[in-house]
Structures are given as structure tokens and as C-alpha cells.
View 1 (cartoon, rainbow over the protein chains, first blue to last red):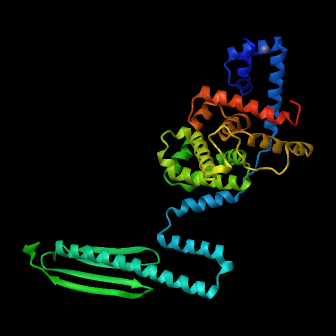
View 2: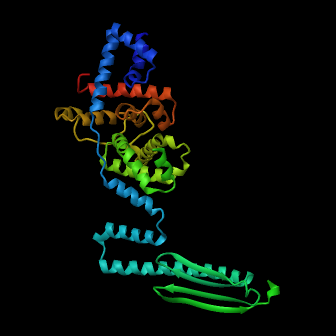
View 3: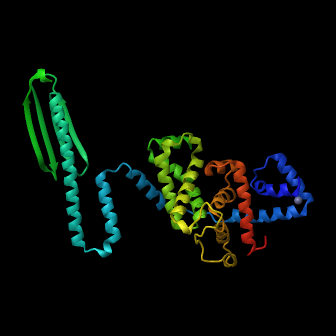
Amino acid sequence: MNCQLCCQELSAYIDKELNEKTAAQLRMHLTTCLNCKAEYESLLKMQVMMDEAEVFEPDPAIWIRIERQISKKKADFWDMVLSTLQDLIARYAYFIHTPTLVGSLAAILLILMTFSLYDKYQEKRALMAWVEKHSRANVSLEINPFGSQVIESLDENPFDTFKEVSLDLNVNYFGSSFFSESETLEKNPFSL
Amino acid sequence: MIDLVRKAKHDDVNAFHELYKLFGKDIYNFVYRLTGSKEDAEDLTQETFVKAFQDLKNLREDSRFKSWLFSIARNEVYQRARRYGSRVKPLEEEAIQIPSTEKTPEEAYLHGELSDIVQSALDSLPLKLKTVLVLAAIQNHSYQEIAEIVGRSVPAVKTDIHRARLKVREYIKKYLSL
Ligand SMILES: [Zn+2]
């Protein structure tokens, strides 16, 4: 092994990445060449420094933040709105007049919820209209803006299929009935 | 480990926590050495594991989890470096300028703070060289693993590690006899 090759391989030798044959050739060269030996020792000394460099301990709070974030994936829209609001409040609390803030946030929240609810209502109404048109069934619906749960039930009534369709729609808002609709439609079975 | 990866793929947060216990500290130290900043290291560790959890289903070979995780961490560091623009020049042969210590290496040495000297020497390297050197010389990854992490060939990695060593030595030589 010549000096140039030896110097090229020193790093890999220190990292124990050379195969046994090349490592043996390199060791042999180091016993005969003072220049390369000096180069090797200098790099080795540096490696000792690196080996002794501090290993840092991560803050345990990092996992808590990771866990919160990966669980957030499953959180629903309203949790997101609320946590964003919480963050905003925490961040800008200094500059904001609290009653005004609370008032405006409540208003925004109310508007958002109403929009969302109205959307859901429209969507479900369309769905129910379709159901009404194509089958004979009892449909009831409950929309809860807080949990984002849409509870629907479509009770097919096989014994009554050819007689009527009964449609119940209840939208609860703040625990009280917001929209309420109930219809029973007579249908000509042969038009289905 | 493979068993934990498989469970974590099915959204098992406890299994993922075990994986964090296995590799969290390594990842933290990796990104800490690359950025030289505790705050950045905390953020990047968090981002790495969140991303890993979300992308886990795309990992084909469960046994490659460790290399895969480090490659995510590396990408996060590169993205952050790019975002800082002029402050950090990751892909060019210029030294990155994340100020990590207030002391000069000489002062650090006088205070016996070996870690600080090593850090300022690392900070004198371009990010590409710093990455492979940290993985090889500080975290003792094999060249094969490093090649997987940085997405390059083993010979290319080997050459870069050697170049990085020589550069770090030049830097430290100014202050210490090596
Ligand atoms: Zn020689």
C-alpha cells in the first residue's frame, strides 16, 4: 500500500469499515511509514474527542408534544377550532381587551356553528329527499354541532314498503330543537 | 423492534412510544449536532416523529425503520435550513452559520468544554459533510446505513466522511495540537 491510498483509507479504517485484508495492509504500512502514522494518530486523536463529546438528554416534554400531535389527527373540526382559539388567546392575550375578545370569539363561534349546522341540514335534507323518492323508509336525523356527530337512522320498513314513507328530521342546537320536520307521504308503489 | 413497527403502523400509540424510547435520544442528538441549537433540536425531533407516525404506512421494510427515521430527520433539518435561506446554505460548499456557542473553540477548550469545540468544528462544515460525519464519527452508524439515510452510494459517503474529517481537523488544529 502506498501513502496516497493509505491516507485515503484512514477514515474508513478508524470507522472500522475496511475489510480485513485492506485493514491488514494499512496496518502494515503504518508500521513502516512515519508520515502516515502521524496522520493516522492525528485523526485518531480527533476521533477520541468526538467519542468523548457530550451526549444530550432530550426533554421528556418532547414525547408529550408528539403524543398530543399524533392524537390530534383523530380530533374533529371543533376541537381544532377551539385549540386554535386557545392558542390565539394564549399568544395575544397581552394586547386584547378580554370582554371584547370573549364576545367576538363567541360570536364567531356561533356563526361558524350555524353555518356548519345549516350545511349539514341542507345536505341531509337532500339525502332524505332522495331516500324519500327512491324508497319507503323512516328517516330520522340528529345533528350535534359540538361533537360533530350526525346520528341518522334509516329504518326500512319492509312490511310497509308499498304504503307510505315517513320522514322525521330533528336538528338539535344547544340541546333544543332547531329544525324539526316530520312528514308522512303516501306513495303510489308502482311509481317507484 | 419490527413487532413495534408493525403495531405502530396500526395506529398503536403505545408501540410508537416504545420506538420513541429506542430512537428518540439518537434522533435528538443527531439533529442537535446538525443545528447546534437545543430549541431547533426539540422542534425537529418532534416533527420527525410526528411525520414518521403519519407516514409509517408507506414504510415497506419494517426492518429499515431506523434508517428511515434518520432520513426523515435529515430531511426535516434540510427543509429548515432551506427555510432560513441565507442563514444556512445546506447544499453548497460553504460553511453553515447556525451560531451554536458563544465561545470561541479556544475559550471552550480552556473551560474544558470538549463538546463545544466539537460543535464549532462541526458548524464550520457544509451541512452535507456535517451530516455524514455526525452519523459516522459521533453516532457510529455503518457506512451502509449512512448511505441509506442520505440516499447516496457507499463510496460517495466514504469520500465525504474523509473530507469532513480533514476539514474538522484543519479547524481544530488552529486551536489544539493534533
Ligand atoms: Zn505512508
